[in-house]
Length: 349
Image (cartoon, rainbow, N blue to C red; front, top):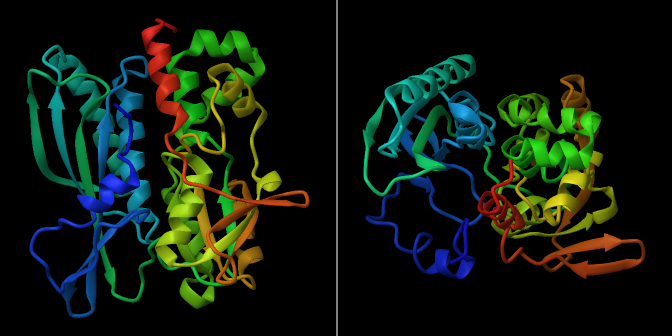
């Protein structure tokens, strides 16, 4: 059985097609590569929402697991250019999770939400047979804004520059280096390992999105934002291009891969361009505003690199390496999942 998200074909025949009762208030519903849903609530206002699994990874511990989980959902909502404000959590805990572990996990959820300005308004908590680590439930976050103030990843347009924040395989590097610290440290050495170990707290992209849109949105700056998750940089670019009905060119050699990520990729035999990229964003920007967007990000210590351009004259997304161009195809699977599972099976630590 393939781990991670089902194939696009399966999703197209189920989740993207079978959506319950139709409503004219649903402005943005389930769709490939779109991070948020948008519902009109009247008087020129909309609700922007997203949901994701939440995790408890024993080797990370309850506090860091909760921190990472909250950041992942909050980062999705923030790709709209609006800060998340409200949250609900569903905790389906394994029977062996003690009250002490639950308390530590929830305290971190509370503290992380508070730091992001999020109010927790409800949810469900229980222990159930058949539940196990690492996915222990889900969370939904939402916010409100004027109907002309939000972005989605389907709003990129012809001629937009494509910006990548941070580096490729950011999430894979963050998690693998923390879940298997001894093995990664031996392979990377102490200096690079210290760098990789710093990735996890930096996976939050809420401020990155909100910083980018300060330049302006739509025709005045940022047109679309998408977080880099399963399938890495390639999947994120393809999802944004497909959602926006444009093609594009990616300068493959310009995609930054840090030295620590390069070494982690060698150790776990993963391709950094198609591996979990949580913590990075792809941002579409009007070309005359790109420098301003990048300056804003860099002034907040966020690495930003132009890696390509969207174009309606190109079918699909093409990768350029030197004089060669080749079509970039959606990754059949994210190698991170196999690497993670293989490490657990072999008892690495």
